[in-house]
Image (cartoon, rainbow, N blue to C red; front, side, top):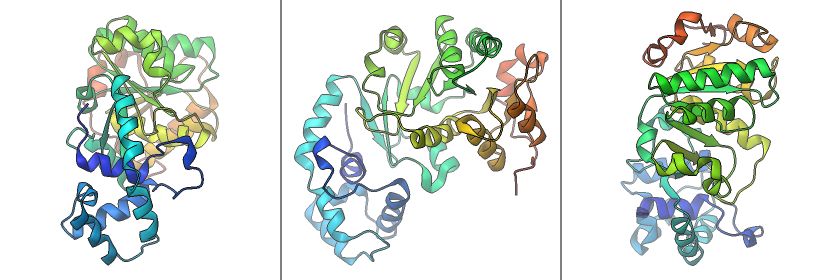
Length: 318
């Protein structure tokens, strides 16, 4: 694993490096890091310059912008802890890139702007982050009809050469992703927790080794799942996809609803919904808000879905 100096500096500023840091300086959140990154760019500096005395000395000239100089200094002084962690991550086959690296998906910056995660952890091929894909999302507690729909759609994606982008969570996301992999397809799983357990999970092993599955997360490898992380993860799924299919959504609540309505507001990613059989009330409301029904004819030409421009403005767009 080659970690650039920019990424090393970003890790020091934004990542929790040990469980013993509860009383230490609070790491920078995405929006705080965006403020610092803007200041660095305006002063012709890169994050990696902060690893060296001349660049670090120039921090004294930064206006606060809500980020205390003492806090930045304390975070940058964690080099020893970072070195140990990088060795551990490399031994587990993990990689990490920061927003300034060429491997970092530009879609995250253009879609999420200041909310783009400063760091991205992953296992598997980084090339998958630059390709097209169909997001397949839905509720964890889905009906058997909806789960069968997701499995069928994931398998058809594989047979038609369309990668699946998924949250890899229990329910719709996982069923669609695993069905695609079982058919020999490709997938990207965006996790709402660290990659520690998923990176060694037996169900993923062969697909990762063969280069067909990439798992990514905005959170440190040993971090745990929290609801707020799942909400942030939903944005990452849509940002990485060229189109999305919502198999089942609750009615105006939950992560699936929040992710779909935000995507409709942004108007960057076409959103389709399952409208056949026992379609959920959430799906019906998403269609009234501008989502499109996934038609029977769409199943036969899934590559067309990921090559179409975004639809015209829906209810949520400005």
